Image 1 (cartoon, rainbow, N blue to C red):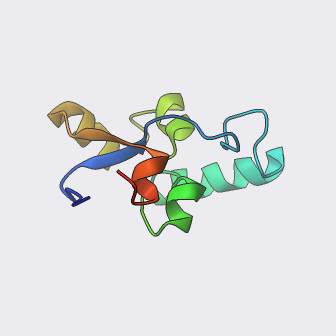
Image 2 (cartoon, one colour; image 1 turned 90 degrees about the vertical axis):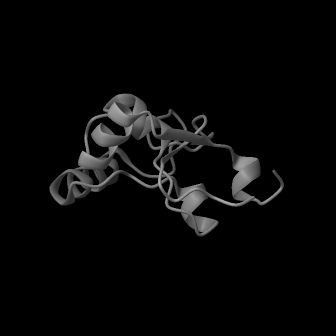
Length: 94
């Protein structure tokens, strides 16, 4: 799949280990550290599955919790450039 790098990519749905889910893979204090670092840097939280696949895609939970947390997120929403990415796309199957 050829990717359009002029859009803001967000996971289509939360994974089973989402930072915002009950089965997150980090402790609550680590979650708060990660989110504070994102806020301080003005960046989104990258989905760990996307990161493992070499993609920089915003975590669905992060985006849903505060879609306008970053300047790029605000601009993408305003311009209609938010694109959902599936786990299958990360794996190169679709």
